[in-house]
Length: 286
Image (cartoon, rainbow, N blue to C red; front, side, top):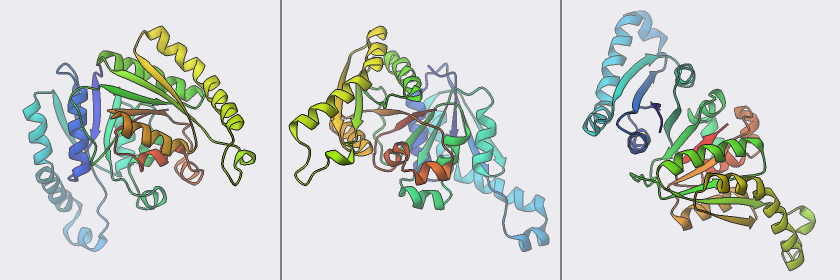
C-alpha cells in the first residue's frame, strides 16, 4: 500500500495514537520512519555556561527516554521501522524528510480551535502547507481500526478534490472498504429567509450538488467499488463531521487548496474546520 510512511512523534498521547494508526495502515512489507525533532534550546544563559554539546547530549538522552513507549509499541508490531532524532524546528525537519521519497505522513493533532492552534505554533498546519505528499491527521481520541470499512470522501468540484478522490479509491479499494461520496452546498444569502429554505430553493441547491458529484461518481464507477453519494445543504465542515459520525467512517478524505497558513486559517478553510471538529482520522491531499 505505502512503501514508506513518515511519522513525526513526540511524547504526547496524540503521537501514540498516530503511531497506532500508521501501524494499522502499514503492511509488513512497508516501513515506518519515526521522526522526532528537537527544537533549538532557547535558554542562552545555560548554553553559554555549559556549551552546545552538553545541552544537546542531555536533550538527546531525554528524547530517547520519552520515546521508549512508542518504540516498544512499534517493535512489538514487527512492522519494519527506524527511529530518527534530529535537531531543528519541527516543521522544517518534517518538510525536509518528506522530500526523501515518502508516500505519506501520519501525525497526531491536538484538536485546539483553529486560531488557537495556529497561534500555539501547531506543527500540523505548516506541515500540510509545506509538503506535497498526503498527510494523515489523527486526533487523540480517534477510533483506530485494523481495517477500513467505510471511507468518507468530501468533494467540492475542484481538481484537488479529484486527486483526493483518486487517492481514497486506491487506498480504500485495497482494504475492501465501502465509500461515501459527499458534497455540501452552502445556500446563497438570498436563500436564507426568516423561515429557512423553501422546498423549491432546496431542490435547486440539491441539483447544484448533484452536478458537483457527477465527475466523482464517474471515478467510482470506473474503479468498480461500492459507494453511495450524499448532497447536504449547509456548512460543509459540520456536514462532514456529522456524516462521519453517523456512518462510523474510519477515515475522512479531503482535498486541500494549499493556501499559506495565515491565509488558510483566516479564510475559514473547510480543511482546518474539519480538523478541529471531528474525531475521525483525516487524509489531506494537496
